Length: 217
Image (cartoon, rainbow, N blue to C red; front, top):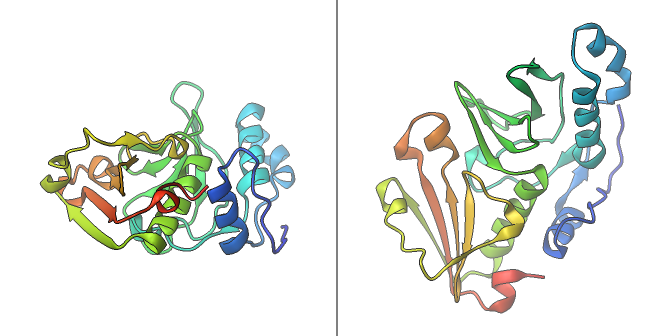
């Protein structure tokens, strides 16, 4: 187990996300993969998959961040566990424990995506870094927006996004951020897709943002 109080922000993150991590993040005790490697190999887990877990832990292991505005706050602490899967189906591993009891787990998929796993796999962002960028942007937008509106269900699909552009750093797959002239929109489709529950489709609309509010570095 390892603990260090101040997180090291990966250089590939935006300046906004780096500031968010350094101001709000905390590193707590977390799994040391090398202590488990031999045992995992004996249980048939490929060395390449163990390396993936080790890389995740090196970047994110033990990172605790403020709650996200969706998915009941998302993981309490980023912390991997033993990989699950097979050579034919691919391998997943835990991204960290949920803050409350949920019908799904937060996991890292075969391609490195951060997402939800229940009866089906639903990738939210192409990487954990994309998820961190999304969380950082949500906290930034909430601070600077003049108004925040929550939309659910069919009303989300009725949003007109023609005048908006995607926010690339969040690496959205199922979830996406959109930037307009003075507005940011976060669309959270994960629960709706993972649980086949269209009523869970949610969007947060942040209005009244200036250029700093829209980008924040």
